[in-house]
Amino acid sequence: MAVSDHVDLSTFMEGVKKRNPGQTEFTQAVQEVAQDVFGFIADKEEYHSAQILRRMAEPDRVLSFRVCWEDDNHNIRVQRGWRVQNNNAIGPYKGGIRFHPSVTESVLKFLAFEQTFKNALTGLPMGGGKGGSNFNPRGKSDSEVMRFCQSFMTELYRHIGPDTDVPAGDIGVGGREIGYMFGQYKRITNRWEGVLTGKGIEYGGSQMRPEATGYGAVYFLRNMLKHQGHDVEGKTAVISGSGNVATHAAEKVTQLGGKVLTLSDSGGFIHDPDGISQEKIDWIKHLKTVKRGRISEYVDEFSSASYHEGERPWGVTCDLALPCATQNELNEDEAKMLVKNGVQGVSEGANMPTTLEGVHVFHDAKIMYGPGKAANAGGVAVSGLEMSQNAERISWNEERLGEMLTELMEGIHGKCVEYGDDGNGYVDYVKGANIAGFKKVADAMLAFGVV
Image (cartoon, rainbow, N blue to C red):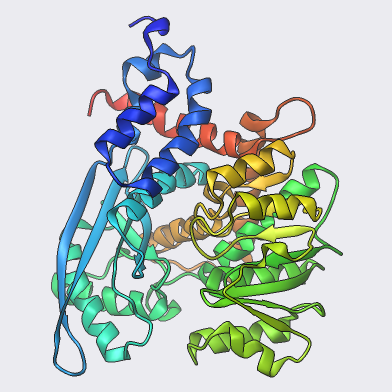
């Protein structure tokens, strides 16, 4: 096929949308990658003739299954579970499990697609996958969560393994849920193996895993700032979310001398002009993980803060922004607001939290913008290190893992600069991440032939 015969971006995306009707999150993720990759492969016939991008945008398999469980009142409940195994060209499928009412096949396909590129950027041998259910752990008893997790794993165990697919946690799936699922896997298979990451330290988990995603997003932000001759110290930051990623991002910003002004949950956000100190962060961690409370309770404890119900924090003037909650939480108007208020850098702790229109605002304004597939790759990187520790039956200490995480995030930043530097002092980190991730996976796929 001659280069002139290649389909253009719009034709390619029409095909993706036709094959995936109504799956807006997935098609958005493919569009965001394709618009950069198409330019890169324009004169590279090998990628065109092998239909590499078309194959990447078609998951290896999408597994859907029924999850039945009994609540505390002996009512039979039925949920739907999924595992999307997107691409294993460079290693076993790797990606989290999400329990949340918003989970759909489209959401999980987008996450698995993104995970493919994110995992490639780490340099570790991990393919891309994602799974979950529309089950909501909030308001459920420990016994109900346990019964659901056991039922979920009773089906999932058939499709995973340390050399096949290694799930981890995500929204709604923390140490408690991982423990219940791993226990069920062990009971069914009679094997102890590194089939899940994010496990407790007592049974094969890794030091630094809880901190890794949030810390990594801040390390990536620090690398972007350093590349421009700046630093985190003395800067103000707005952060969305109040879960594991957000609180650890806040913790690292504070450790590096920055001031965190906001955190949020689905109900609204808190604004503390005095700064959310380590003591306050510790209080929030206890609130969210032990009491399972709401961020609005913060203002009852700390009088310096105000609570803004039903709002997001992007209107608060800041130097740095870290969206760490969920997808599409920062839209075009909010991005314009951040730019107008002088934001210098944005680093995504969540997966695809900025809409395409918002990304274009940051790009047009030449704002340092770290996309999730690069900026929040620290979590899966340490998950990959947990896999290595499980395979070798060893355990690295926190200091060593901290060094490795720092090095991994520096490496990811370097790859983004390599493919995203426009030569005029601006780095398009989205373009850099997309091309670097694509090239690694694409070259592996070419080596395998048509499979």
